[in-house]
Image 1 (tube, one colour):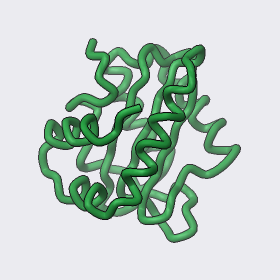
Image 2: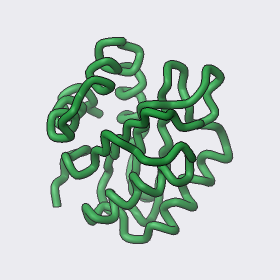
Image 3: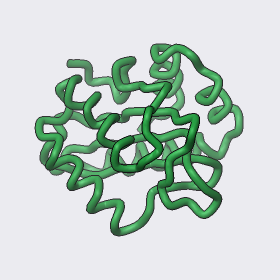
Image 4: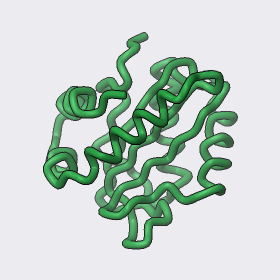
Amino acid sequence: MSSELITTELVDLDLPDADRRAAVRSLANRLVNAERVTDIERFLDDVENREQQMATGMRGGIGIPHCRSAAVTVPSLAFGRSTAGIDFGAEDGPASLIFLIAAPEGGDSDHMAVLASLARRLMREEFKRTLLDANDPAVVASYVREEVKP
C-alpha cells in the first residue's frame, strides 16, 4: 500500500451521481479498495457526522468532505469530478471538484494541514482549471501530490 496522500486509483474523473452521499460513497469505495479504509459504513458515518456540523462546500464549485475516523489506516485524499455538480452546501451552488480527505482517528493535525494546503491551491484558478481539464487520473494524482503538501 502506498503512503502517498493520493494515488491514481483514488481519482475518479467521472463521478456518476448528483447526490452528495452517493458521491462520497463512490470515493470511499476507492479508499476501501486501496486498503486505506477498513470499514466503509463507519467511515461514511464519520464523514456524515462531520458534514452535519458544517457543510463542506466551498465557493467556486468545490466540495471537501473530510473526517477523522478509526476506519482510516493512512492519511488519504480521494478526488472526484462531476459534470452535473453535487450539492455540498456551498452558497454559490453545486461542486464539480470533490476532495474526500480521510484521516486516521488517532492521527495528529496532518489532515488539517492537508485541508489548509488544498484550500490555498483552490484559490488559484490555474489549479482548478488543470483539474477540470485533465483526462488522465495518473496525471491528476501526480499534480495534486505535487501541489498539496502538508
